Image (cartoon, rainbow, N blue to C red; front, side):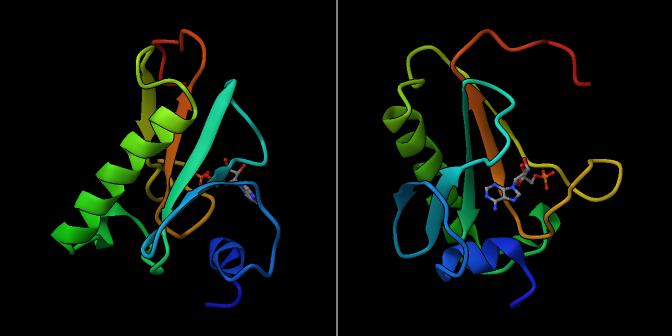
Length: 112
Ligand code: AMP
């Protein structure tokens, strides 16, 4: 999956600002922040989107990583939003499963 930009970040072929990492998950700053806190939580295994996520253990690890990143970024008390865009209507631009963690301000209730 050399043409996948997130795989290239995981393989250290492209630089990123890493916030958290373990054996199965990496979290790094989104290059184009949409909120004061905007971190991407990404399984290292290349999975196209949430519909392809079949491993319950990996889902548990993602949940753990979300909690860790929220603590590291200091939004665990104030709240945050998790988004995983899926497919064309969801405007998924990178076809490697990832979760946007957004926070650091009161977010809009509107979806778009
Ligand atoms: P999505 O549109 O849900 O697929 O989100 C993809 C996200 O990846 C966007 O918010 C981009 O800003 C972000 N992104 C793309 N390339 C990079 C990169 N090299 N480093 C960090 N974030 C990136």
